[in-house]
Image 1 (cartoon, rainbow, N blue to C red):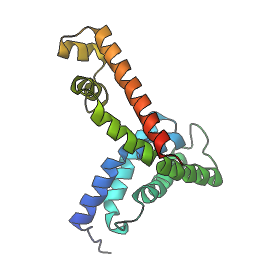
Image 2: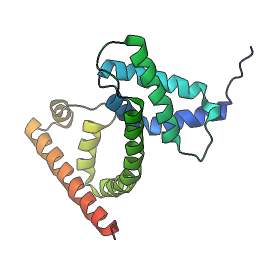
Image 3: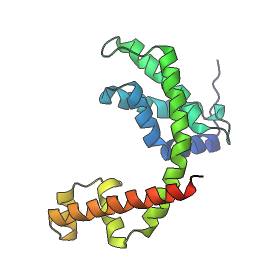
Length: 179
């Protein structure tokens, strides 16, 4: 039986969407499969499966719903293959988790947009410290302090103030959007 290879553009598109939503998908899997190592295995298998099935995804449709459906199947495969560890939720409970996750996506879209606007309002140094702490390298405060020639306490205070600013700014922006 001949297998067809997915179109390069399809693969590229689903991989780009996967990377954009990787945090949400990783959290979704971890919520269904609380063992971190096993959930990470499922997350990686999800990426491979989504890449293989790239042509099945229809651009313009809900990528997260499609990816979650595949993730659900991968979690079920993981449970069936090991038969060890915590017992799986029954299918109806899994479907309820998936439905509530979709509702959260909708409610978090406005919050993410508000947070992005608030991040733009941060002082450059505060933004730099947040990026060092929470982006790519995820440096701990002692390493940030060393890199910036600050004290660890100064880094912790700066992080605390930046987080407080973002929390209050986001809350204000969300309050103005509600009817």
